[in-house]
Length: 223
Image 1 (spheres, one colour):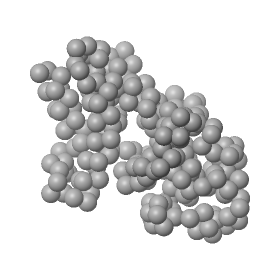
Image 2 (cartoon, helix red, strand yellow):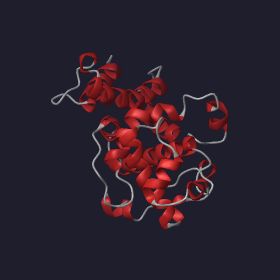
Image 3 (cartoon, rainbow, N blue to C red):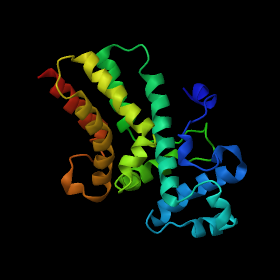
């Protein structure tokens, strides 16, 4: 998988950014250090001024790539889901319907390991941002407009892939889309609970969100 990913460029919807950060060393530094800074201080405290100070660049130079920190968060979220989608496609190829769905659950729910194919992005840290901050990318007044503009197309595509796997395994199941979106969003939430509200989840050092959702989906589709 690593060799395949190394030949692929993660594609993010163009409307999210002003200038593609992948097109220059400064753009890559903006992405790299924004991930580290958001992880350190949180998205609410994050500003382009602080990021500019960190990378030794003018705040105005960051606006040449992203018009707001909200658009930057949308970029990071889209990049993450595109990276997950590549793994999903590769690792579920040529599997039977049951194994395909089980592997897909594993891909979207498992703990993240750093991918050396993208040296300027720390996927482990980005995963923490997704767990802690991802909802802020769509819980806004502009979500419907941004959805029409295609900002969430990659995220939705993963939901559709899981939905189709559910249908392939059990065509008469009434709620394939709801189950698919529950797996994806619920996994992030279980990881959050595991770290911050341990009394509200059974996931711990021994029980993973992957195990929980594999068990839940298997029993749901058997009934």
